[in-house]
Length: 115
Length: 114
Image 1 (cartoon, rainbow over the protein chains, first blue to last red):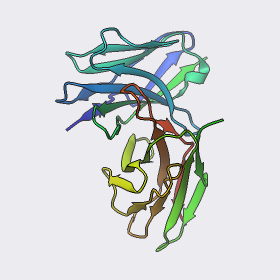
Image 2 (image 1 turned 120 degrees about the vertical axis):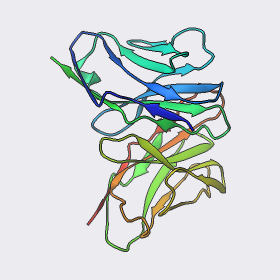
Image 3 (image 1 turned 30 degrees about the horizontal axis):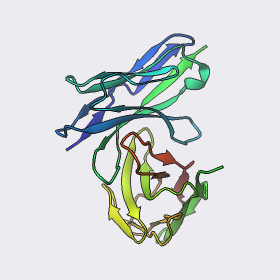
Image 4 (image 1 turned 60 degrees about the vertical axis):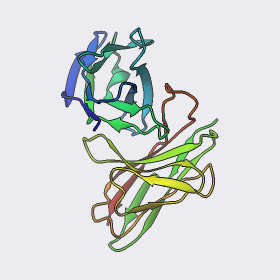
């Protein structure tokens, strides 16, 4: 069975510094996709970044990058130059490469950016 | 603008009552999903539908029902059989054109028991 583990319930970071949010996953599938979403206090889920299991390079999207270590089954999100607006819940999710396009989510990490 | 609309934003249920949460999308997405989120936890899949008039159970389908009569609409009914319905419910959809496509989410409905 697939599983996503986020071991950091809460994190603090100083404004303008970088922060890494951990995500480890468990799957026996050779092909899968990994996603990160941001959930502000208002509740909506905002897609941040995607990493495919066969992608050769780590994904980057603006201030977001993914430290993908396939052998360790980890897909950590790195946020550079943190901003106050980055304060939110962050969820790691995994998808099998089947027709359902279902996502399995981790329990999330609450990030608080200090001014 | 295209997007996913969930209504109502807040909903209260009385004991023994069924309530229906609305989810409408104008993104022309073929697949739609319902998730439940409990405080401080991740999202769990309730039901999903890949095409009109077809849907499948997710991990926590007991006490819930859905329909998919139109491509744009995927309402979720929380039945009286769901003994602990208080949660945040999120609807999502996706255009299944590529493996890197993310699910798009609505703004959610908060359901509470009176």
